[in-house]
Length: 448
Image (cartoon, rainbow, N blue to C red; front, side):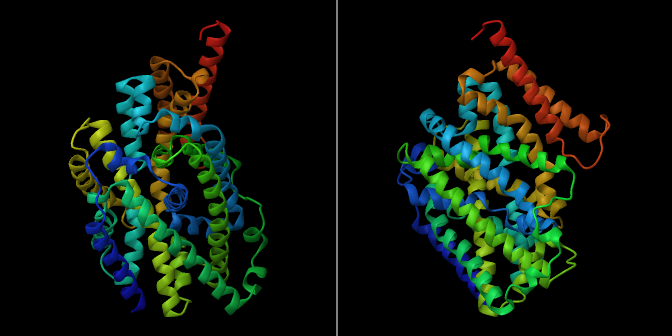
């Protein structure tokens, strides 16, 4: 009962907020980037909550792999986050653009920008996060999954129609509170109620940094984490920052917050491994932990999970609409009206896309789509930001074709393979090899 009341009140507040928040005008700078006036605290709040939306998948991996999941789940993203803070953020902000396709258009031409728009659409598809939101809502209301998917789409987008990116940033500050507050309260309860005995009784596999899988799996995760370089969410927030000092400072604070939350998420999942062993669907570990909590605390915890997921859902819905309507289709006038049309189209497409995935976990969805985007975006975006490593438009197209071809041939089984290695491995290795080879050849010939 408490969960129903609290979640309903939260959704109602989101609905009320949609009438209160309104972009000051229809200018693209204002609607898409909050007038480039995002200060440090909103920057950190929206960065932290948006980047951690994959919360059910994170719980699943900590439950399956124990603390060693940190080696591939968090460490790679932390390292690339540091790279972004110190070496890339200032370069990104200096461009004064609005999106990654605009960056690609500036340095590789409009045709590559269209390819980039399609890749961004895949990368920021909100489907995975809508699915997790729907799974949480189904646990609260007991409704069919398709009804919960529709509900998640409506309440993740309703306040975007009038407020734009500014409404995302303002609401993420509230979601930040629920995200950390829910996990802190649950961990405090588990420590008080059960002590540390459940954790002490776990096998070494769960409590030691000893990864028992194929070493290529860690390589896969590091290659996937390289997408931080070309993550539209990072770029959007850096473009929207109020001054040049905010991105580096904000990213470093965000990394600290992510590290703290990693500890909370991992510890709660390990309690789940001890208290709810042999779970058939490990993606539901946090909801199962919720069943062990008092009713009021359970409601707060579910709300924290939902706020965490929906903070990414709304951001990705917004980025998807921007990539579709502005970057791909080229509707650059009447920004708010066209973005509203885009939000409707993306929501409808997301609903259709989730039909075959409605009973899967977020991990399945992630590995089906993300590798191809890494092969398409990472090296061109890196080259755009560093002129000495930039390929020509024709060379970039060759790199793209061979990179995707390697991944497709690997995925299809045409190239003999062992284990469940993701196509991102051959794809990114080919991309890196071509990039390094062409840059080396150019320098050998003295070509700038």
